[in-house]
Length: 448
Image (cartoon, rainbow, N blue to C red; front, top):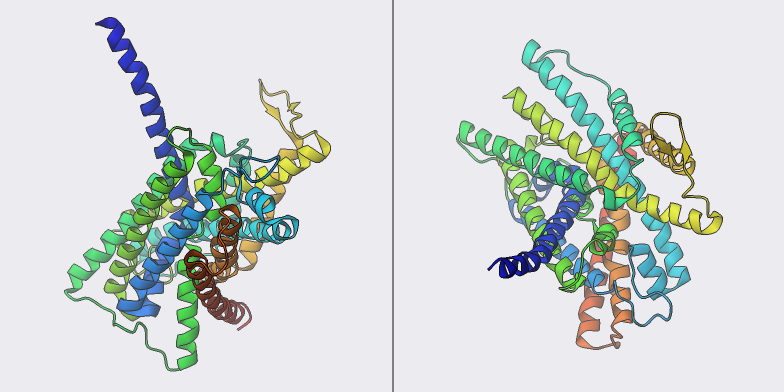
């Protein structure tokens, strides 16, 4: 009957909308998680070896998933008299842990979002330069003089981000996230495919159980620390989780949907990281480059290397916005509450185009700063490790655990309390080790 068909269509619409929102949330998550770090997995695995490498990726992926579950549970804060929904990570810390913890967390959040922007600028500049180098090597041979500076390409990426940053908020970045997620999966598969082809072509698997050998034992220790820092950086997405969760609708409960999305996202990410790391290490062994597609372990087919690097740049245009929009929302929300002029827009006389002066000035300044720092410290692996070591423990481990304790009223010395305390202390010791190693690597690279 026509009436029955109409009712069935009405019932199907919420299901279709829910599925679309889940896919969008997954796209946001993948775009935010699978970044430039995936191409450093081969280098990280080369430092750790065939056993410790995959185990480290699995362990840190598990830590990130635990953190995601804990954070998903604290979006609704019924214990607080005035604020019932935490729509951002920083708001949740302020609400549950108080002003002092919120202040410390705020500094770390701003640093984390800023350093992610810096790393994305560095990576994009390297990838754009690699496209030009790849074409040069194809024309002039592998011994050709094809060295170019990164700075011009970083500036070009910064100009694109200045324009993209005028997007009002994360709710308007749906298609950017979908494209970015597609690009990240594409270049990851290209890296894996090229590695497998190299292994088949040479007829053997490179690498060892202990990883790269060094003449100095202390150097090996520092390299292992840097490798773990690289992996840690590649799983830091806790800051954007509540923003993504806020885009979902109920029923089912947002936290349940977000847990499923997080599980799928982390499984996809960890699988790609292991495959990309293993194929690259198997192909090059001790000669594994720091970045699989820009380190020129692969010269041919040059067009595929070019395409992979182009996918990275497109992905990072979107990934930069996913993280930056979170910071923009925090700063502009505070500014609007204090001065109440953030929503004013001006007619610039070009059709119906209108510009928000504060948004234009603040976001442009922010992009210029990230680009400047990237030009001063253009060291891919060292910056990845240093960034990951600073923010992984406090933002991915400590604050989520402490919020979970208070939000769920977990009593001291219960089984849950003891297990999470052991988990926190272990991750803290791991973070101290990676911080020392990454700092040594960054200083030696910059001033050595």
